[in-house]
Length: 183
Image (tube, rainbow, N blue to C red; front, side):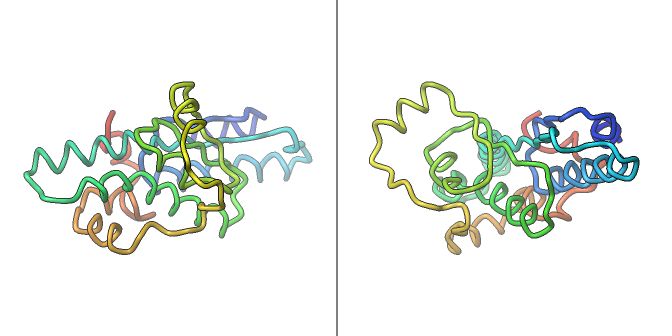
């Protein structure tokens, strides 16, 4: 409700500390309702730039802690791609539905949190430490945003109900948002 109302009043929001696709979709839907109300009243939306932040690295952190706590065997490589998979799924849905909110990726933990989003209409918050690492890397600059996470890694992640909650649009109900992830 708050994001819809703020958007209606002309505020460009940044809905931060999201970990799941369901949260990102809820934000985009609220923003769209607010924008539609403005437009219905003849108010401009031209200078509005709403953003939804997904904390990709904190999603990874949470799932790593969860598998350790529950003594579940899963590869580190798959866990390092969990946040990437969530962001890419949300990004795909945003593009398919034409949401005017942009996704912002934050909380980098590994190079995938940068290189996997190259080419996307997306915002990245990159600390100076990571900027220096990237500048010194041999990462090929190419469009990766539309390349899905490798099937074998996604299949491994899908064994975790906690990952499914983050990945799928229907993974969490709004009343569960504040209880999921690395809050």
